[in-house]
Length: 143
Image 1 (cartoon, one colour):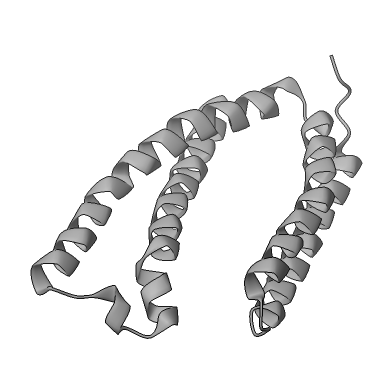
Image 2 (cartoon, rainbow, N blue to C red; image 1 turned 90 degrees about the horizontal axis):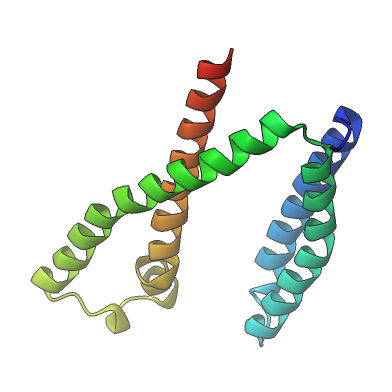
């Protein structure tokens, strides 16, 4: 069994927050370049190199109950959040099909937001909201 170390947990979370902000700033500035795909890939790899050890440190600093809260919340909340996004995606896709909207005719930024990026935002957002709701319920029931 590992020892509960709250100081390391907060340091790891701080590193993740700082890395996330830095990745966001870099992604925004690098997307204006001639070859943004390469720079975005390099930013993603650099972010992973920083974030993976920080998340491992965070996980190891948690006690068994906190680990169970995260695992259970991600499984149940994330799964139910994913399922909850399906009707939203179906309505979105059917609206585009019914109105005869051609994404190729739109500005590239709008087309990307309505295409793959929009889908990822909806799906991951639903999973994250489900996770947060399940996490809150888990801790409310344990108090």
